[in-house]
Image (cartoon, rainbow, N blue to C red; front, side, top):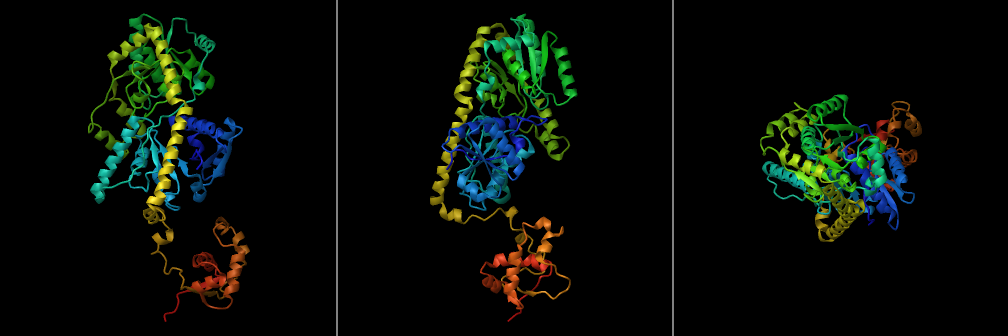
Length: 560
């Protein structure tokens, strides 16, 4: 099996040219760059995309070419399961293992492994994808990679809730779930390496004096969907007053609209008049890098349910910046308290308090943005400790330097994609060993698996009650009486009434061959199949459209 899996690829999940950049897109793009780098080290440097559209495959080829002249981009069109099975594994940039596992039934549940990944978990779409895994035909050689321990805990909670529901509904108590390894998102540290000259030039461009302490917040500038800015802004004002030093806040990102931008600007003016607040357009790569290089401390008081990892603190550590973050979501894993920065304790209401909020979201009374925006209003940080930590970092440049160095070292050891991709490769090899072993040890069970998912069945089985009769081996047929001018089959195929189905309809040589074998006789489908030297199923596929245009007539075999 190749070291790298086939990658489910759609440009929207990997390409960073959309109007609204999301964390999963940044993570997808970063993963793809790492996969390309890993492919370069392979004996056969190839990377394979799994996508239905030729246009998507072309984008994949273009992206691979941007980062490597030696890696060969290849394409397997979705549906070519035999080719996918030869590769041994499929990577999905999301939690949608269930649908992929159902499709895999068509070639066998042990034909290849599936690995998915967690991103945002709190949307209905994400949660439904996760709970759908429980009754789906996932196997022990599949995995849903969790970026953090808190993401793993949330997935296990959803699995447990779904299992309890299914036990109540159907009395089922045994479920096979995928492996849930914790593998973090990686970054490319070279993207965040700045020389002394880079930093000096960046600070000069933002007009920072030597003693100014610049705090950077990078990411989506949205108070309902990322981090509510009030605690950060208000605490920086108090820290500036207590330290008696010049403090700046660099907001690096994009506002979703002018109303949100106005709200941020007004809040900074009202709640932090002694803090110089600067907005840097995060869409501009040069300006984005300049903001990182110019800053002294990174701050992110995330309070949002849709945040599960948070890549920006890792990028900050790669930039040698100490970090001040909320003790929330994946920040719990990425930031080492007192070593690479400070994690400020957070508070949230207990279970059941949010049931009314969940019900309103389910009913459509509030939308997703309002749901997460209202939830974040009930999340708080320890504001007293926050101010103390900010003052400590403002007044102690040696502490900033020590924490920044520790953060950079941590990134090199834990979050560099060269390290993280090795963890993926180890996982894929383990899954493959598990899968191959099962092909021997569970051969009987695997052989009894259904050929497809119930909701993806042969339509002629599901809708068998629709027709008067069904064509079968004993159905008889003959050439039709000339009810109308029956055109040649080539003419039929060229008619706009039929051209949309050209790939589905029998070819002219097959039609003519069947008619030649039929002649003037009345024959059963079974006998005609023998005459043609093919299967009953194939003859039925040919005969059905021929009957539609009147080339043959069908009848039930007479009773004996």
